[in-house]
Length: 262
Image (cartoon, rainbow, N blue to C red; front, side):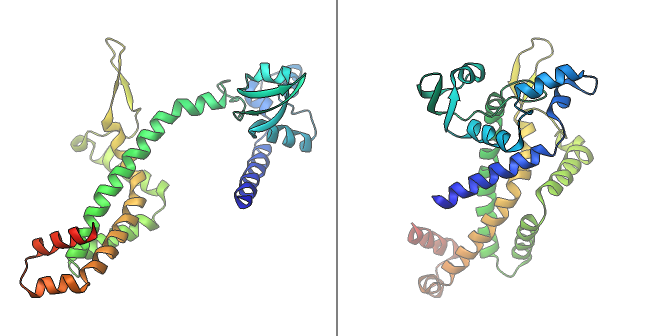
């Protein structure tokens, strides 16, 4: 537990330090043409006119579920939670992540808008990785020593070793540009498209294929290797060798192995 708390604290400190080095947020909001008075007001509103140590504790107080806030802060930031006290309140709240410098929206709302698409992509990638990972792992074990086994092992090693961002570029270019006439897949696209006539939104699952494939490559490679190792371990058991020795076909032996595993 304490280790987890220290890790979270370390991440918070790291994020704070990183964002302190990305320039002046006031300039990001008003642009280069903003006047000094406007930028000073923004800095005051965001507590950027305070010393760094105080900015850090204010930031920590915002992102912490257990925090101290004034009544004005609670109303201004629309904080949700259970608070007790007078003008200065102590409470358990939903962490406040601030507002986006570009869109002016609450960061929490921006994250929630992206959450359904993120979950859809994650589930699709894991389903793809699980199904094809088990299939390739079983094939590699059954055909041990053949080109199918070697290909599956080589593909899994490549999938684990290759950086995801590099694979994303290669896959997007190959399937979205080079083979676009055959695949019909786009280089980019939202998972929702809009009908230009009626203005109605509809789900476009084909835009999910390339992102799910890219995201699922690494877990697919790991599942393939784990399945292959497990299958080879089971195939070396005495009851499987006895089944082969007694003349059972591979199909019957695999059925008996499946029953034994369950």
